[in-house]
Length: 187
Image (cartoon, rainbow, N blue to C red; front, side, top):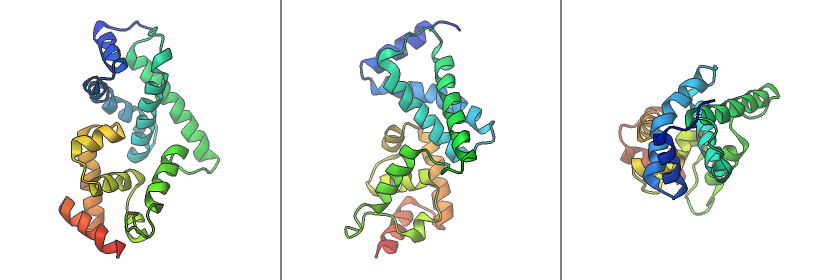
């Protein structure tokens, strides 16, 4: 295992200090390679993105005890590899492909506000992936692409890909039309 480079050490120091810019740089630097690694293991892109998000969350949670004996890349790939193994074991046991945490959070968001008209009706939820539902709900909260990326620990490019996919699945051509379709379906 190789030690941290000066750049990686600086990045970790920035993240430990609470720098949003440091966190964004970490995600930008590693997200693409981590997703490529997961999809190369015959995992669907949406599931790979969820696993990578969980990898970043695990990294952040373990940061206070991170010993810095391995490069940042090695450490992140090690976390992701463990997440993939757990994911595949769960799929083999017949469990939902979504992680428990992501599935619970999404289900809570979809079920929220039965009378408040803030959930996602089945007519729309059935057409979208879990990640696309999350993005749609954040669009409904009037968040911009960069804000959604930060909230979901993914890149802005990935947010735009999800938006493009959900627009196609809903048969609309703009974010505004997607939100209008959501509003109409809620009635």
